[in-house]
Amino acid sequence: MPEFTIDKTFIAEENNHLRTQVQSEYVQLGEQIQRRGFSIDAITKQVQAFEVAVPSWGVGTGGTRFARFPGPGEPRNVFEKLADCAAIHQLTRATPRVSLHIPWDKPDDPAELTAVAASLGIGFDAMNSNTFQDQPDQRHSYKFGSLTHVDAVVRAQAVEHNIACIEIGKAIGSKALTVWIADGGNFPGQVDTRKAFHRYLESLRKIYAALPNDWKVFVEYKLYEPAFYSTVINDWGTAYAVVNQLGPKAFCLVDLGHHAPNVNIEMIVARLIQLGKLGGFHFNDSKYGDDDLDTGSIKPFQLFLIFHELVGAASDSSVENFHPSYMLDQSHNVTDPVEALISSTEELQRGYAQALLVDRPALQEYQEGNDALMALKTLKGAFTTDVTPILQMARMNSGGAIDPVAVFRASGYRKKKAKERPAATSSRSGII
Ligand code: PSV
Ligand code: MN
Image 1 (cartoon, rainbow, N blue to C red):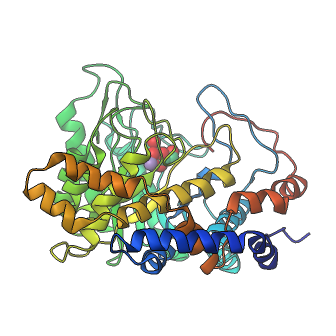
Image 2 (image 1 turned 180 degrees about the horizontal axis):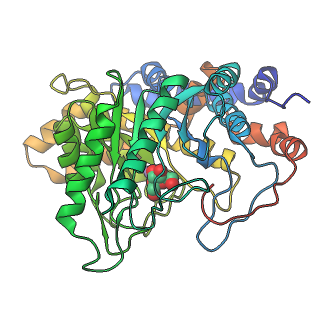
């Protein structure tokens, strides 16, 4: 039975119901922002060019360490995950690549996986290694660490796994490896902080040596969890020290959820840009810790401020080789994962479009005149602009859906998948 896909003509028909309304709202907004010196068509084109990778692990229902409540029709293997990722791209036209997690999505035949992805109109982004849990066929346990383990044989196994991820990535057209380790300590004294960091550098150097010339390695930091007292790569400063020692193919990855509450993430972003080491993002949102909630759902102003830094860097000729990778990294426990990823993609585009509306010359003047109130007002003016018509028009121009969640629901995708994919018996906890 061929897998159900959302038909292009169905999207176009659904768009027809909203087209006139969107066009008139677009014209209105265009006039409004023209008075501020912006061309709406130019901004729409920039939004159309925006791309973010979807995490393969995000299309299955997530869970907490207490329980997982699987939804109907969720993907049971990497091919079904690709189908869901392709549906997101079809509706948003902004997610042409998938970020794979190995071994969760380890392909038996990488060539087959590449061909299936291509037939669905998508490709692959950064590879993610996993040395934070034990696999059934694994020789040595990661219970007490992986790349920083006290035992050299465990470290060697973890290095080997990362190199295997690069090999799979090479076969499927990926150009980057993201390394996140759970290594750390639950108790004071458990880990020798300096020795663990030294071992990390030693391991990473071996992985770095296996990177093809046109690849990047992203070092992802996280302050805690699952280690609850200390983490080996705990913050951006530590990650920066690592990538600086490794060389030009190494960059820092900022996962928004990996900071203490209230940390000024946009400032970290600005620092990494200035130091030439911002590799990319794992976008999500959080209230308390690494909550992996939907992007823009809790702190949309923070997201806008991050994009303000990114837009500023992109138009600054003194910032060279600025090509950060954008990826989503979320866990969907109570919503349909496809709908959540569609909405999160839209929230990223919203933050980006708002940031494109900042009157930068005016802001610079206020900054240089120490006019704090007007500087904030300038940012707020952009942030509070309802850019929805730009996002709708961008999607429509690119062949996507004006209202992608509504079209997803109207297509009956989930119901059809529930028939095609009878429920798996397992409901193991945690992310899948
Ligand atoms: C860890 O919390 C993380 O953010 C890393 O990126 C992992 O690869 C991902 O979540 C999925 O577990
Ligand atoms: Mn992450």
